[in-house]
Image (cartoon, rainbow, N blue to C red; front, side):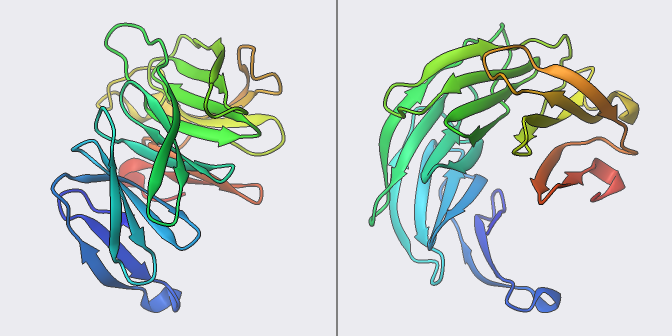
Length: 231
């Protein structure tokens, strides 16, 4: 499933990876900015504050849930769905018909800053914002609890993911502006064995372009590196 902006949601058949094809394009009132898959359901987050539920096989639209702000990211975690907006994270529980709101939290952000991403592992939500990460205990999703507000002195955090061994990999830049040199926007590896403490920088891994986004799978990191392509 692909978040295709004003064109809606693209459902792609990858049975034959070399011959991948779009088999259904679904349009909504708002722009599709985020997408996630849980089981046989696809969830699309849109700019008009909604999370839409669709059948992954047929593309049939089931139900939509309205939140307070435009949806920027959708992240599965522990069988739940976490919807990040610029100022909040909503915790949603899948149901046969759609989604139910379980809980939510509002990170305290410095003036003018917004939530960039959320990653969930082992009952902790890692909320990326321009200065670093803010952690919340979400072991009880109905009552999230703040653990720590990190501040690294950098202003270009875009996304962060955990690798499952107590390390966090972040797409990080010294500055928030993307027109600064590509050398300002690389990958940084942090030790985060204690989610209620400040992440400890291990190493910075330079990339040729601007590291916008990343994913980790089986010990490998995959990076969307701007005009340099995919690493």
